Image (cartoon, rainbow, N blue to C red):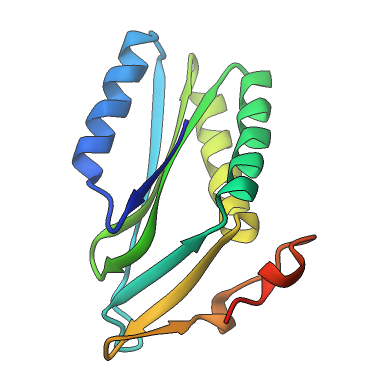
Length: 148
């Protein structure tokens, strides 16, 4: 349940859709995380490139881990430009019990930050500048670990 959207996320719409889905499945816990683009270093926003085949593989491995614990993951991410004070990332865990959901959301969001194949650029003065200092090499990505 990985969703990719052009530009900023419509958090309210996605949240409502996910909540209704979870209620229909009778989950007792629905834990969400929303990432918002912060104003810093005079940026106008962030821009994202996504390598979808690797992202889907990464997400599917997490979905399997979640299933083993009786939970389900959902994730939405932006492709392209996202202005300051809007959202580029949402994640959710659905579980019959809160403890699993609380633990899993933390593990998932931290691993997302470290390992998801998404490249971030600062938007400054109408330019798209690779955020090299805030990027991490993705193991096994070859040329994709250093976009220009």
